[in-house]
Amino acid sequence: MAPGSIIEGIGNPVRVRPRKEAATVRSAPSSPVFAGSVVHLFSGQGDFALTPLLRLLPRVPSLAAAVAEVFAQADRAAAEFGVAPLGPRLLGSSPPSAGALAGEPPGAVQLALFGVSLAVHRALEADGCRADRLVAVSFGEIPALTAAGCCSVADGARLAGRLGQLLTGHGGGMTLVGVGPAGTRALLDRAGPAADTVVPACVNHRDETVLSGPLDALAAVERFAARKGVSVQRLRLPFMSHHPALAREAGAFAHYARRLRLVPPRRPVFSVVAGRLYGPDNDLPRALSACLVRSFTLPAVLGAALPGGSLAVEAGTGRALANSVRLIDPRQRVCAPLAEGSWLGRCPRGGRVPDGRAPSRAQDSGCRRRPTDTAARRQL
Image 1 (cartoon, helix red, strand yellow):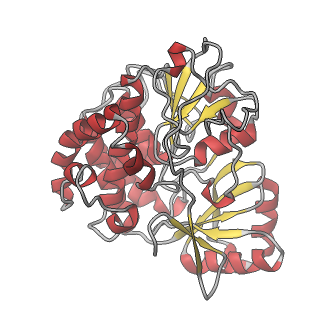
Image 2 (spheres, helix red, strand yellow):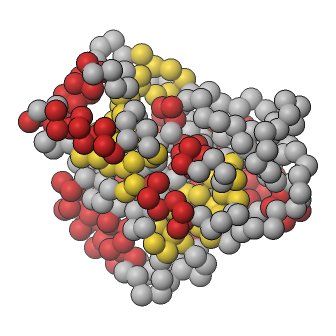
C-alpha cells in the first residue's frame, strides 16, 4: 500500500487514493493580536503520515531541533521493543514512511507517532505558540500527558510502544461510516446478527462515526451499509480499539503503566475519552487503559474541551481532529500547521493568527480551510 493512502470502499478490487498533502510552507496572514487561550490538540492513530513532517523539517529549525531532542530520549525506549532508532532516520537522507514503519516490529508506528506529536508541540512552543491547555484524543493522551510533565519522554515512549504491541496482537479493524449516532445505531440494528460484535468507537461529528470490531463482522456491516448508500471506508489500522473485547489488553496496559513513574499533570490536560480535565487525584494508568475499551463522542465534549475564544492548534502531522472541530463549531479558530503547510511561528502572542474571516486567495494560510477529504477526518 502506498504511504499515506486510505482504502476506499469495500470488497475487491480495492482502490487506493493518496492523501493530498500541502506542497509548500506558507506564512499566516496578518490579523489582530490573539488575546484568548491557546490549546494544542493531540489526535489518535487514525490520521498519521510522515510526509507533512518531512516537508517542513528543512525549513523550520525549531521543528528539526525538537525532533532531534525528543527522539534522543524516546529512542532509548525504542530499543526495548526491537525498533531501530527513529530520530536519525527521520532526520537522515532516506527517512521512512509511516507505511514502512508498519512493517517493523509492533510498536514502531506508535513510537513514531508519540515522538512526532511531542516534537511538534515543543516546536510550536519554542516559536511562541505556548499552550494554555492540552486536549487529547485516545492515543493522543500519551504525548499530551508527557508534554504536561506526567512522565519522562522515555517512559512516554514506553507507553506508546507497549500500547502498539497490545493492540497489534489482538486483531480486528475499524471502519469510518458517513452517518452520525442515530444513523449508526439504525445501521447496526438492521445489519443482522453478524453486526453484534461491532460497536461505535467514536463519533467525530454529526455526520461521521467510526466503528470497531472483528474483521468478518466489520465486513458484513460494510456490505450492508454500501447497499443502503452509506459511505464506508476501512481505516489503515491493523487492530480495533475502543472496544469492550479489549478488556484484557486494557488491564495489561494499566499494569504496565503502573511500573512507570506517573505524576499529576503540571498544566491542564483535557481527555476527550474521559470527558474531563485530569486532576491531581486521577489514576492515570487506569485512565490511559480506558481508551482501549471506552467509546467517545467528540461533539458532546468539545465545548468543555475548548475554552471560549481559544485558538486550537493540532500538534501532529494530520488535520483530522482540526477538521472535526471546524464541522462541530464553525466559529472555533483552529488550524493544523503541518498538514496545512502553514507553520504558525509566534502568531498566538505576536499578532499573526487565523482570524476566522474568509481569507483572500492571496492570503489563504490554510488555517481555516474547509475539509475536502472526508476520509481524512478520523480520530482514534
